[in-house]
Length: 184
Image (cartoon, rainbow, N blue to C red; front, top):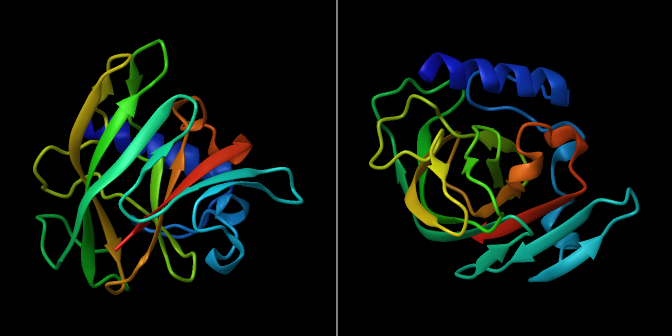
């Protein structure tokens, strides 16, 4: 399972044209516009045609096949997984994710990214030892799961989680509608 998840990350990053190493990557054109140009909440369409739905801190983000609520964020320096070069700690995010589609869906390693205040994107660590890891969890239609994602980061920051729909989670370069949910 772990090798399959790592292979999926590598394949998606190559397909999406992302760059970077370890558990951190820049999402290139898939990164959100600067936070200063986004509404506090609501949906906007940018010149490139991409649609962003923004949920404020403490609210639930709802896209057409997934909803996500941040239940808490903690910053720790050890989780049983090595930190990539330049990273100093993990942003441990506890989430409740609901599958609002009509079929079972599996959370992929590239479906939810941590964006710092400068919109640097960081992937969740597949190997971090956290309670109730969410990567690879299958969620039945209409059901919710609560669990944890751990994002290697260079510093403790405020920012957004970039959320892709289940339908786009393995082809993020082609996504036309993404969500942002503010954290801490």
